[in-house]
Amino acid sequence: MEFDLRPRKLDIYIVKKFISTFFVALLLIIGIVIIFDISEKIDDFVSKEAPLKAIVFDYYVNFVPYFMNMFSPLFVFITVIFFTSKMAADTEIVAILSCGISFHRMMVPYIFSATLIAMFSLCLNLFIIPDANKDRIKFEEQYLKSKSKSVGRNVHYQISPGEYVYAESFSSWNNTAYRFTLEKIEDDRLVSKISAETAVYDTAKCSWRLKKYFIREYNDDLTDRIRSGRQLDTVIALSVEDFYLTENTVETLTYQELNKLIETQRMRGDANVKFALIEKNTRFALPFSAFILTIMGVALSSKKRRGGIGWNIGLGIALAFTYILFLRFSQMFVHTGTLPPAIALWLPNLVFAIIATFLYRIAPK
Image (cartoon, rainbow, N blue to C red; front, side, top):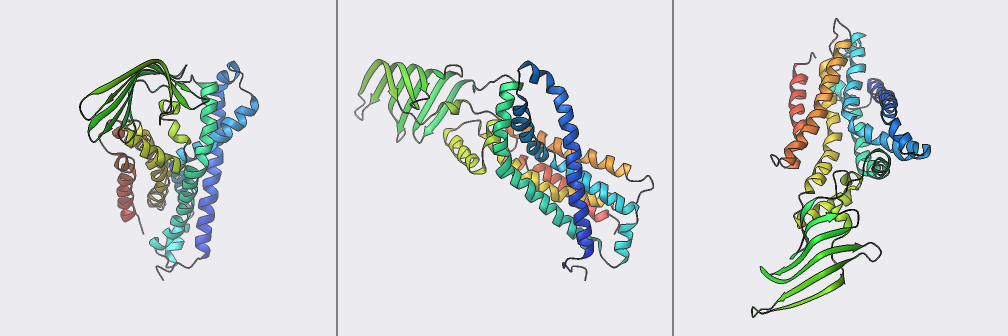
């Protein structure tokens, strides 16, 4: 009967406690965070005359899913530690084990609840948060912080196989690339090269206007032909938005859009692809942490302690924040090129999985 997975009253009891405690903790902490966030940003709201409707619906309504997902490991760990410690303090766990139900079987409703929360977090990551982030980030750029979009100087892109773009600098104020060059290469041979003093993006026509341009075409017999002019309108597989890509941009993309961006940036040799890869791996690594932290929480809090549940809650908060900090710190391994994103972003889960396995094995059963 140890591995009998048929639903029991005990399973329903634990699942109800887990889910209800999770959402109660979620609502309480979110309410506290919103109050502190308002007190911190009230001066910006007033000085920049942010409308009340925009504050509520464009910012805070979209801020809640973002915050819920970011700190979901903390909420899961606190939930498990809190209600499991209370069950241990009330001798409920001793009674469960005394009835012939093994510790492993008791974990089944915990894992089921963790699965529901992980699926909830994954749905937020893939479907809800990207759209919510669009309005939230737009509000922040308009009312909370200065807008800075330019990717900097010396921009190199491969816009399509064999076509390379270079711009010495780009101005986000007038959508102008300076010292612009477009080279076309076929069979490892330079076929043509377009150079322009400036390239201005026309948002209405979705085209580029090259000013003071030179076009040099190379023939197979090593001869070349040069043309020049004051102005040339042309269509290039490059939009002004490609110069505006920032770390926040990837947070607004759906999973399909994120994959498409990664493919495009890899083809172009764009160093900013690391932001997209970090976002993609984080969207899956974060929900998976619900399983690890649930097992760790049960292992830490299933024993009745003389000092009550305060020690367990304090330890749970400390470990949960350690996991979140570890996850954020692991992004530095990607930025420095120490580890690829797929390894760096899953490293916290691997380390905490080892810790959870050890704690589970030594937990009193």
